[in-house]
Image 1: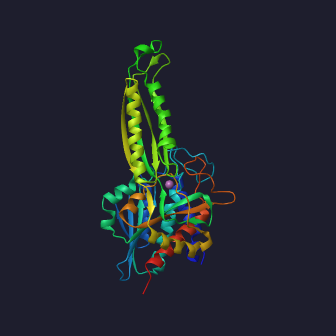
Image 2: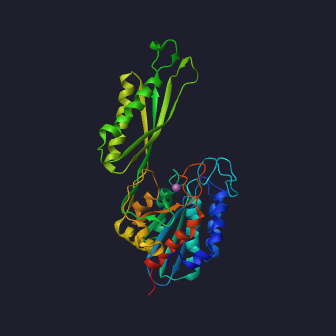
Length: 390
Ligand code: NI
């Protein structure tokens, strides 16, 4: 059984849903239209709908039979604050907003599974279809968990999926352990002493001090972290000054830290703070570090990973299921759901011969509609497998 036949039958319908979402992107926590559409479809199919978790979050619950078993499947709904460069008909209608990560496709695949399962009703137990806001940095998944997602909708396991532009259509990675990095952000405020650019000896130049800090940071990953562990420290903004003849009084840097192990995360935070503060102090300036732990490591649980792999093999064939792969240093807020409940986050290939290869977050990215029935079939198969009848 490769793709579920009934699901393949409404492939065109799913493509239309996906393209409508693509044309009308909404940023994190603002997914009003998107969540209205999701809720309306679920209700149309007789699925009980709960709204309001994390603002625009939607949970559809479908309970059949007598079993107490329950699973959750999660999709993300938000777009990115960037302009689309594609010229096709379903490109974003909103300047500065774009579905450049394929969350339009993730939402559509979960809707496809919900439609199929509500029609066929071939399982015993409860499925919670979880549509979360604000995956792209806003932590909508964290907010849903904090607001009682799994108290209101108890599950034995929770599953999530992301499209993958580096894997061919028809392949999937289902890997136990860490699959996405912890993702933190920081800002370093440097206070020096402003003055005339021709008289630097009367000033304390935050640009020079900031530059020393940027260079010194590079040695954290290169010299302080075990080479067999992983750390990324990227400084992505450096702001100071207003004119060519003024040494600014202050400036700030910010950036991101990605790690895969809790102890490395602790070390990098400590070293980054120490280097910023002591480098500034060496030049009679002051540095203040704001460090925010954003997303934890996304770590798949062994037993649920096995179950997801079995379902994936039924849909795609065992030889198409990748069971070992190095983690991505990207962050993912499904991590909060996996901290709360056992589960697995899989990556579904979308690279075709002539489409689907442009990386996510690129202005020419587009979700490959060819994989809509694959993702929907995966979820439907997993539900029927995990909540078997009789
Ligand atoms: Ni994404």
